[in-house]
Length: 286
Image (cartoon, rainbow, N blue to C red; front, top):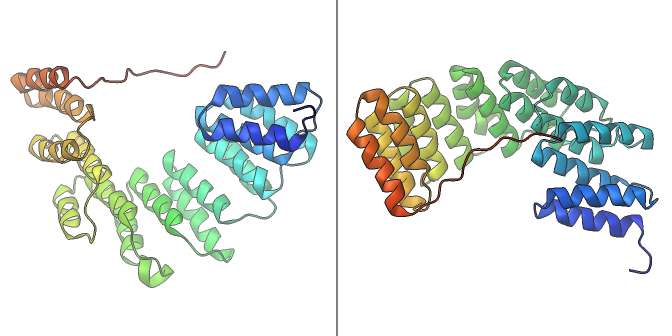
């Protein structure tokens, strides 16, 4: 292009961010600034989304400072992305501050704050935000209820979670979807109520997906129920034949039961199927 403007820069940054080219998106954002173009809301939002995706907290905080100087931090468009970035990076105090600074909160703002609290184990705080959301006149949607049930799950609030789940239709006009059922399987499983979790799976109006069985498998592993773990693992393998996670989980579960022969069999199966196991890795900002 003979001349680029903030719109063309922002469009390219957004495209790189959406397809997962995080480093290229951030480099282009820096190039845009060095080129003397005025950074607009779209470019800030895309750069912050990228920071959220790769948990680049240091860079995200620098962008926050530039946002304040540009006068964009209070709008819901950029404010929501800033809030998401802090939630994804696990800096809940900063997320809470970003949430309070959004002048016109929308349903995304409330949902992000509820989910942020839920993911990081602040279950009671998530429930308080939910009550504030209702008091502000917002009606919960499917995402709200997923965040709420997840909060109950991570905080061990089993009875409260069941209350929300079974009154969802009557109180909020929401019909439970598969993700809500999966949250409940996880909630019951973590509380060692595995029989109730299995009963819920049998009675739910949907075919369970791999996420349903993964929740049951994880709970079975935590509570040492090898037989149930094997059943859940078999169901996952039927749905995801290329997923080696089943064999890995079982090979880690068998030693607790002293089943060393089964450990060897599980590891041989991983080798024979030819499925590659992605190595674990950690991120570090330089």
